[in-house]
Length: 266
Ligand SMILES: CCCCCCCCCCCCCCCC(=O)Oc1ccc([N+](=O)[O-])cc1
Image (cartoon, rainbow, N blue to C red; front, side, top):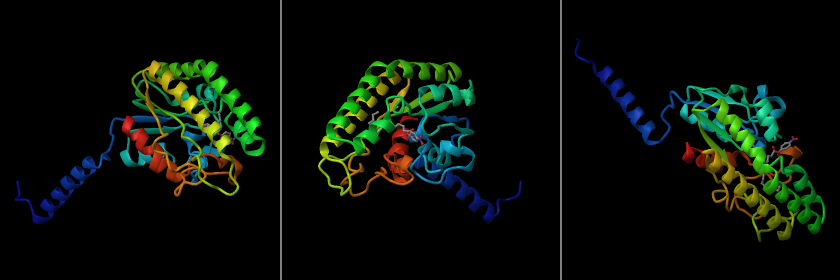
């Protein structure tokens, strides 16, 4: 065997250092991981820009936490089927064909659309305080009474198709900072009502996830001081154009909020 040349040693040392550095940073390749990213627009990355052409109206963003995790960890496979506007039934009907017994990791956020996210937000932004409070009460009643069964169905379908996967369910943030100011924003009564709806949704989702044996990533605390209205660095779009991107995480909400919460549960 020839004596190693100086160049070879340097190359070997560099490779070793690179591996060590990557491991220390937690970003070594996740060989053997087969990752599937499911869910609604908070999962697809609507609001974060840079949508993939293949995703069409599902609006899957290369800035979404799922895509960022894929880029950082190089899993053996990655399937991104989350879709803007998806409800629990849409996930069951349209997103699960990519799951199989080799799937080892699944992420999902779903339930907000079933509870009437878009119509509730529209009422709260355009109508009176009392109309907003009524809409929020209706959404909460749905979340408490009907959503649990819908979530159980989605989670059971995921487990049936991907029995070997670790499943991480992500929740939703408070949308509004209380007491801050924003010129064209809504008042504190509406803000508190909307935030309380996120609390009810998160409580229900966390419980059903635990019951299914899945992990739950709560994003509320990490989004604190990054909400709409008065936060110095908001991670959420306020009322914006295109209108459907309103009240959704920006790229910063995915990289600074959802990604670390998801990564901590993997
Ligand atoms: C349900 C009560 C509403 C009160 C707000 C609670 C705050 C946080 C909850 C966020 C839930 C977001 C759910 C998913 C969002 C989603 O897919 O939104 C859509 C995005 C785009 C469309 N669309 O049609 O283009 C439709 C819906």
